Length: 262
Image (cartoon, rainbow, N blue to C red; front, top):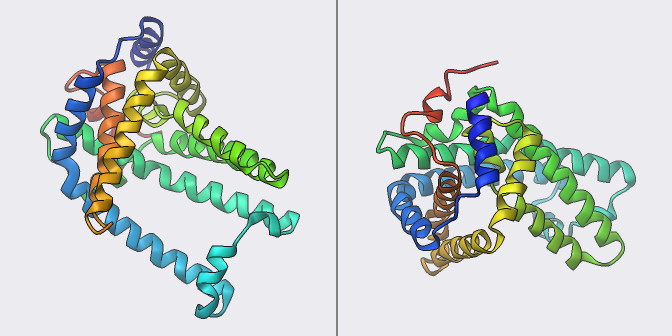
């Protein structure tokens, strides 16, 4: 822990400059290794989640004919105070429970870089480690902040500002998950240090994320379903940005994951 904390703190102080072109190049090289399996994994997760949501909503709606209308017209502000609280609690818990999956895609990217084997099961491995707690806490905290701001501002009729603030928070906390799983940081430390790292080179990182977003959208040209197979590029990009800011030893952090439990 101490060694990893030192590496992260040194990176914040020294601020290793990012080479825009090199980061994109390495991200794309990594993406080619995980695109197929990563896309299949995302497709399976989407189908499972969609099925669960449909069953859950249909059970409460009581009529399939009203399902689409209910989902389209749903507005948390139409709920009672208790309803809003339950809505926020459910969203926070679900987001927290899904957080390890995003971390799993980052592990997939790491294994691909080292030319080590990985599988669909790799995406779920963080549910078995001590990192699960910190991933859950970080995702929950960020969700609470985002929901509070967006819902509150929407109540006063300034939805656009809430949306902008939500994106800004997402931008400065983009390195939270890799800091937890690779840097072994706590949730609060990861959120704070992510912001500290991003603020050192905001324009370059922002440009890289824009390229990543555009790269994902390219999948829309593949009858829309292609976006499922371009989404792993985001994880490759996030992983590459992190490793260029905080260099990792080839046989270091990832090998400890799965063997360290609380």
